[in-house]
Amino acid sequence: MAARGRKPLPPEVHVARGTVQPSRDLHEMVQVPEGEVIPPEGLPATALAIWDDLAPQCFAAGTLRPADSYAFGQLCVMLAELQRAWSDPQMEAAPAAYVGQMRLLAEGFGVAGIKSRVVGRGTNAKDGGGPTRKFGSNGRR
Image 1: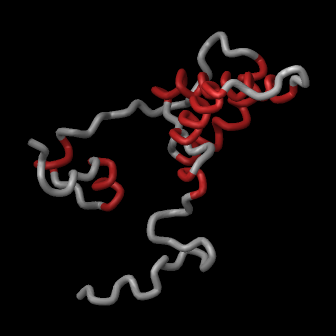
Image 2: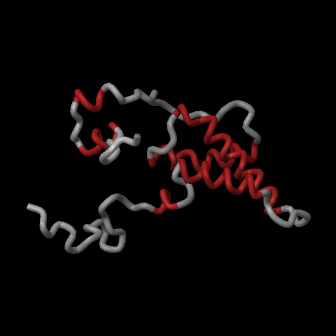
Image 3: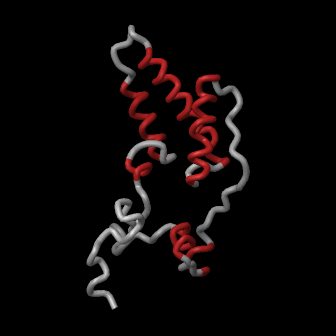
C-alpha cells in the first residue's frame, strides 16, 4: 500500500527556506565536502577545454560539487564526442544514445534543459523578479 499525503521536502529545501526542525531534518542531511572541483585524471584535451568552459558556471550555480567530478567529466567527454561527430561530414547524425545521455547529464548539472532556464521559484524574469502571479496571494491571510 502506498503512503498517503504529500511527499516530504528534502532537508536542503528546509535549510534554504529557514524552516529547519532538528527532529525532522538534521538526521537526514548528508554533509557534502566543500572545496575546489578538479577534473578527473585522464580527461582528453577536448573534454578538458569543455570542462574549463562549463565548470566555473556550474560551480557558481551550485550544481557542481567535488563529489560530482567524475559525472561532470563524463558529460564533458560526451560533449566533446558529439562535437566531433557533428563536425564530421561523413557522419549523418550523432548516435542517439549519446545525445540522450548527454542531455540527461546536462540537465542534471543545469547546463541544458528546463533547469538551466529557470530564473527562480516565484519570480518573473520579465518584471525583474516580481511575483509570477499577480493575484497569487489573494485569499491568504
